[in-house]
Image 1 (cartoon, rainbow, N blue to C red):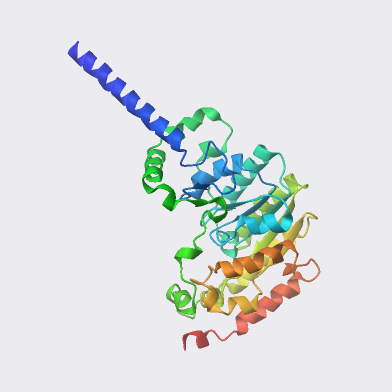
Image 2: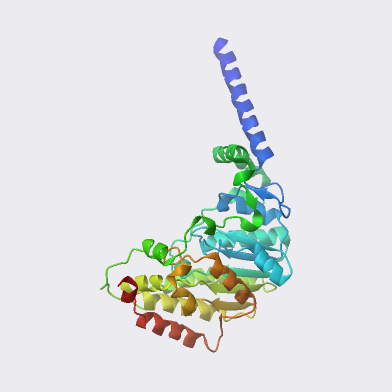
Length: 343
């Protein structure tokens, strides 16, 4: 009898603790799953893969800006102000195409339609073979029953407590969410410090070395475009610095990479609702290492420069000219004096 009483008491305490934990998580809502942030309101933004589901589901928007950490320093207000309609930024560090597909699918389910999507297609994503999603599926699906995982999740409770402890000083507005430019230094010194130069002399990869990965990736992106002909998609390539091309040359993969980019453009030009914008050729930007904190991540000065050009078709690749534009890039990255950077 005593053992039974102890078991019942222990079980009751455990249930009470679980209930209390769930109540704390529900009250604080650290993953932004329940409420909508109004203009000027602040929150603690620390984990895109968990928090984005709530933002995509609850916020008001007509346009999306999607990308990896290279898109994180965009401010949605830049697009909202220019387009005249609300914009939400959706970023996943080192994001996979499958993850952006899940996010985009939720946006259409939650809002019915999206007017414009600006998607940053990093060449590194394009040639990445592993596209498995790391998103918590239960937050992105429409099954409310499995949402209990969120309320009984130890990570959710820890984040709720962290939110309470840190208070307002750690919070920011949605417009500044997930930006990291204020915590990094952008300079030639920082860019060089963040770059490890590979030894030269690697064998050149075949030109088609990345085509299988590119084909699989473009099947995903073209699927978005085909399923939503009412949406105008702008697919943009970011301005990787000359250090990236130095690395690519020394690893023997430049031609394979450019071939994959050319293939991606060819696929996208089959659709009337797609514009391709490329800052890969922005020589004045990519050769100035003061714009970078490593070999690929540029400052918000550059993202602010890119945003209006993405919306006005500047730096656009065109169906009849893109091969020549990519060939211009090919010649530039092949002839550039990289050794002078390190002299």
